[in-house]
Image 1 (cartoon, rainbow, N blue to C red):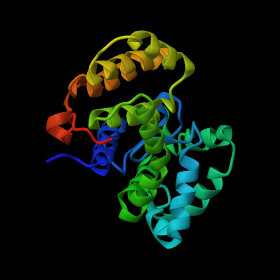
Image 2: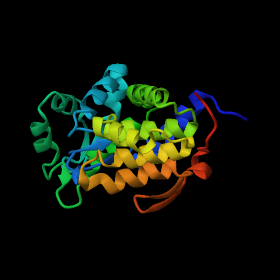
Image 3: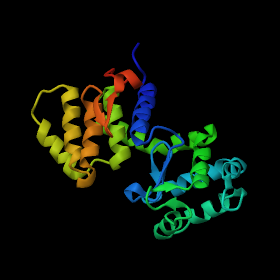
Length: 250
């Protein structure tokens, strides 16, 4: 049965979510310099994306937010509501947030992992279906941009939606250099969409910081090249695990 565009969007989100950490309730520390990264798309304090998401969750349901932020703090041997300090720090500068969340009382400086009560707080928020809706709402601009790119470059397949969405999540947009490299690799050639997707994956890799180019390449090529490859050291089969294929959806 042919897939709809909405089904293709959900598949794309699930693929990228698996690359970004695997769940709505994921939380990791400052291993990559982003202070704290959390939830389905690794929104982070370092890029000022996590702050607005947390505030939107609070606005959606303040009481539920407070409940999720009420956690047992071992130092004081009791449950404490940390919603107020969390919301207050979200309105401070990135430098202030870094000092707050990389303090050893909140994050292990060696393991780069939040202490248990802060880790529990973020996981509690991510597990709530109501806050998962907020996450999907915040992902929509990335998906809208991905669909616009598919139309611009005349991509029509479910695989293309997944690739362009992963590009938008990981890199934000297509740079001028990426557009030029892709044009040079495809101009005047009669080639299949899959080959064009591979050329896009190759072109966008050079857009990334050199430190992360290998990761960008493995993710993009895994999607473009029949859904198989190694990402973060793990063998991937996106057709088997997510049903990713080449059905036309646009």
